[in-house]
Length: 188
Length: 50
Image (cartoon, rainbow over all chains, first blue to last red; front, side, top):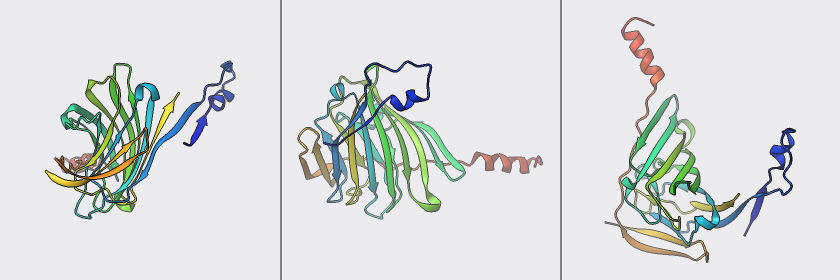
């Protein structure tokens, strides 16, 4: 396992009005998943999670559309609930001077075009109410077609834990060899 | 149903397994991008406000 820590020391150094804490509590990022696809896949399913113990997850997914046949939509599912309408997504995405902004009864993570790359950073928590809440930034496609955006996703029903996260593409075996999934558990 | 590879990763043990599975795939959705600045400029031109 690899660790790195962000202490509160840095923020407090510039704030003389705040007394420094007697016990510095670092935010620990522990890598619990780091996998690179060795075969083109449709879906990646991560089991054995426990957000009640782990507190929150930072998921990083770098992928490429494998088939060249067209754009794909990659969705994120919690606890094997693969019914799209059990999620809502609010999104704001830029495409040059144009923007897309809206709310879908769906759980779209990112939409790379044919043969294009995507990179998403995804924070996953079980919020105070008990909803699975996902906040992400994304950058996908390239050069004159690059897109960037951010999204919030929640499930419509509360969960007692988050034990499974699934990423599934709309295209069969469209997640290319070399796509990489990293998950940190973040205790803070 | 569409046959495709699924990679399952057990975060506890680190075990990884590829399997061929029949999956019901959801459709690809295209976002509708709008350039509102351009749309406003076009309307201004139409009504002679430019």
